[in-house]
Length: 81
Image (cartoon, rainbow, N blue to C red; front, top):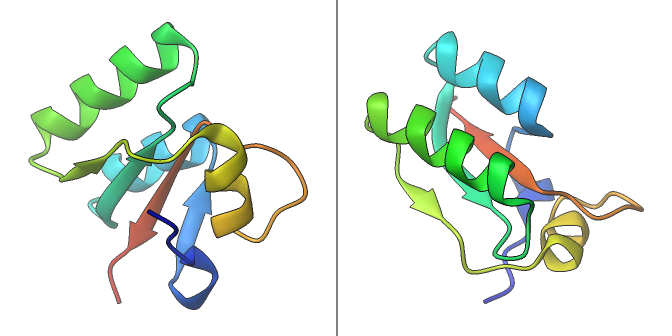
């Protein structure tokens, strides 16, 4: 599944996604299927605590491309309007 997050307001990276969730701005969280186990577990825990849907179907490379960045990404979040 290839999603283009560049058409959406989004943040990339564990620190920014965590902040967006804490502020109530995250609408959907993407976690790369091949991300480090610590990142996967932490992001799933935080997302589930806040009732935010998780998409873990993309690899880090695919998620980076979907975010239109030049590096792989472990996590990203689509922000509310």
